[in-house]
Image (cartoon, rainbow, N blue to C red; front, side):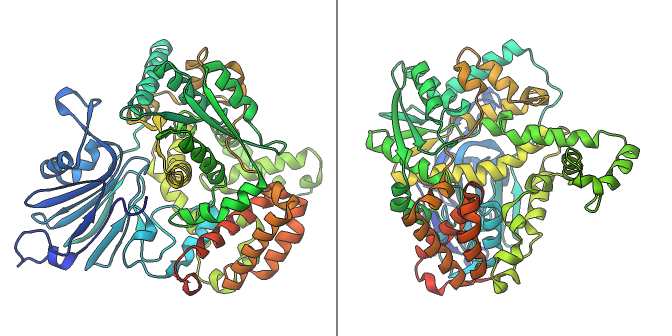
Length: 596
């Protein structure tokens, strides 16, 4: 739903030292929950909660806009550290002559804004911020092609910023100050008894799922067949004591379909299982609408199957869907965590040994032409790349070479090193000693806040159904941060504690399977389906006409690269197609310009 949280006001009136201390008449503020008093107004969306000091830090009660406003008067800008749950809020305080904006830990709810020092406009959607204009951010276009989404604080609109997860913004007569309100403090010395930790973990999951049932007539769950979605689905059945509705998407493409595991989980827990097999025809019918539903270009290819899942659930009568997002990023479930631990072994070698090895692995070394040693040289070269840049060593657009992909005018306006600096700044926010916890905190920004959560939020919003993320509950997040690092990644075993704690609850087949999720076989289908290929070719050709990509690159991509390696190059075709389809959905799309 558009404009659930939006507003604009004249800052010069608010900051005028001669003006009476009253809210400016120019203030327009909308939200799902709005409260006012003599001095201030608060608007909020989501499900915020407030810490209750009387019964300890862990206890929280549901908070209304009125309660948040009272807490603001008591604590000022420090109030964000006392708010939990999912939320985006705006407070306009005439007495303090300031405006305060904040979003939750993972930006489950989002908040975008535009300010020039004289006016302020904001909305939960970038494309609904008043006065955003038609000028796009050239750097954001490159960031999209690099990350397949646009990381905060940039948005596709040059004048609009997006508040990063776990951040607050204070605007007063002295300027604009952005701060992190939730610290990334991992307790790496804590080693609880396993049995006690297992029981706490199971109880926290149960409570988190149960909290999402209140006030809902029919609650369903996404079920991919992975550990996270299976855990949520199983708890939903156990709590309700019924065959809870779960929804799965399949693909008739080798190497992509996980329906077998979804069926295993559904049978194990006695779920009411709904299956749908996505087809190329579904992509043709829905790609433009899915692209244009998002408030800026979004390239996570799982967005389309997630939408079909949510649409089927809504048609079945569900009022809320439970998603399993967060388990991998809280408890160490992504395969890259084990891969990066392997590369870190090289850095454990004495520096003298590494100095002898590295010349033999240089670009011009004859060892690179010897079978077996070539792989060793590759390992050394990869290991030498510092974190977090190493995570993007094989980034698609960098492998293709931006100079060969981007139009000359756009290329001249972007900083190719900006994504690296953005990643380094994010990496430096977490000071945990262990590699695994630093990678988890990094993924809370890029994988969760900027990619997976917008994917699910967009899919369910488009289908007209609410969504919740039980595994991202504050208490589960805090619990995960208190676990020993080797309980998340034990040698090369991913999410060791999560799996051991749920052994006997989850089916064994689910515990040992490799993660895939709702991966989309877009490249494979595009190479085989003329109508889909025509849609992609038309989209990419128009992007070339706009000057965003080079026409000769589009020709090579569609006629050479995609047919030879559809699974690999299909990702580039997808993100470019979704970019063009999003642009076509913008008012006066032909007049859009970009600048730095």
